[in-house]
Every structure is written in structure tokens, then in C-alpha cells.
Amino acid sequence: MIDPLSLLLDVQNLSVSFRRYQRGLAQTNLNVISDLSLTARAGEILAVAGASGSGKSLLAHAILGLLPANAMLSGVMRYDGQPLNAVRQKQLCGSEIALIPQSVTYLDPLMRVGDQARGAEKSAERMERQREVFRRLELPLPSERLYPFQLSGGMARRVLFSTAIISDARLIIADEPTPGMHLSQAMEALSILRELADAGKAVILITHDVDLALNVADQIAVFYAGTTLEETPAADFAAGPDALRHPYSRALWRALPQNGFEPIPGFQPYPEALPDGCLFGPRCELKTAACEQETPPMRTVRGGKVRCVHAA
Ligand code: SF4
Image (cartoon, rainbow, N blue to C red):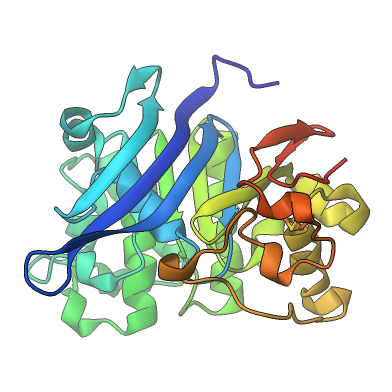
């Protein structure tokens, strides 16, 4: 049961497609996200986990209004109880909602990184907070006076991370924040996200690394081919396959190193070639004729949500 007071971001039935021109003026629409729903609550970390190409980063860009002009959206997004439309996205992005992007090109090449991390606020407290975060992420003090081109890739990623978490944002969307960091730095970065959530912020942690997410997440949304197949308390993922509801989530669990490193046969379908019915059908050992009739709707099962006709 969702506490309505803590619900900060509510995405319902989001679909995203890109209009493409083929030969001449012929147009086609490429569906990259279909009927996707999720919620982010103050005080919690929602990990969005899935393979590359499952639509995780596109979701972040859709929330922030950063999709290219040929993108078409349907569905409902609400932030703090109000519709999250283009006007509000412009108002909130960078202030109420902060993104930790994947690409270090988001850093301003002409600004010292300490100034970027502190943002517009010049108070002594903000300076102190920036230095504390830099120290925790093993960015030496003199690095605050450097420009982005003077940093290694790993340092630049840690500066990007610092910039979002030092801000006053209430919702932080971290898009694969840890690649390029040493394990100790990655664990420190995750523990900072945990502290922020414990202080009342909402965090969406986008990652392909379920194992890493399990260290800090409260909820896990399992993405596949542009939609959510399961939303589960992280505790169920840690408990093992019997606690999970979807065959793909169970396969992800078995693919973890400590659980046998069992590969998942087959591959995720491309947006141009989605199967009829269940998107996981071609890889699912439990498939029946019923699975091909329509895309299974999301339904509530054992305290989580699942998109599988046979989940019980
Ligand atoms: S709906 Fe059918 S094919 Fe899809 S995951 Fe469930 S059992 Fe497998």
C-alpha cells in the first residue's frame, strides 16, 4: 500500500515512440517504451534494473523532458501530485529533480568543477558540503579548482555525482552512476544515496547491476524491452527465486555470481521486432498459448506487481 503523503513521482502507462522517416516521406513509429508504470516515494530508493537497451535511460530522459523532438509520449506523469508537463519539467529539472547522467559531457567545460558542484548557492555551508562529498568520493581538495578536461574519466563521473547530490533536489535520478569508480568509491556513492533517501529524498537508481542495487534499494523495478515486468520489494530479490514473481526476475537472480552465474538463454528483442503477447515469451520455459494472446497486464501478486499471466 502506497502512502499518498510520500508519493513524489507517479508514472502511469507511459509509452514513448520515435517518429522515423524511411524512404521519401514515409514515416514509421518505433516503440521504445510501452505501458510503463512506476512510483518513487520520499525516503526510498527505487532501483530500476535491466539489461542495456531495456529503456531505463529513456525513462529518465522522459521524466526530465530531455527526449529529442521526434519523440512522442502518452500516459501520465505526476510530480508531487501535479501533472509533470513540459513547463513543469523546465521549472523542476536541476532544482527539485536532479539527474546524475551517464555522460560526463554534461559537465560545463568552462567552469571549475568545485563551482559546478556547488551550483548557484555560494554559502559556507554549501562549500563545506561540497568538500565533504568530494572527500568521501576520494576527490582530493585541489581538484575543486580544476576544469573538466583536467580530470580523468573516473574523477569526472564522481564530480557529476557530487553535483546532483549536493543540490537541494527532492528527487534524484542516478543513471548508472558507478561505472568508472573503484568498488570502494561505488559503495561510498551508494551509501550517500542511501543517506539522502533516509533524509527524506526520493532516489531512482538506474542500473544493470542488480547485485550493487541490492545493497541499498528498497524497491526494484525489473525492466525488459521497454516495460516493467516486475516491481518487488528488494527484500524479495535478496530472499531468492521463490519470493520473486516473474520468470525473468528469477533468471536475473540465478545470473548473479553468488547464485551460480547461470546465463539467460536468448536475447532481449529489439524495438523493431517485439513478439506478440508477452515480451519475455521467446525466452520463457513456462510459456503457454495464453501468453501469446496479449501483453500481460500488470497485476498485484504477493505484495508486488508482475506482468505474467501465470504468476501466483
Ligand atoms: S506470461 Fe507466459 S511467457 Fe510471459 S513470463 Fe509469464 S509464463 Fe512466461
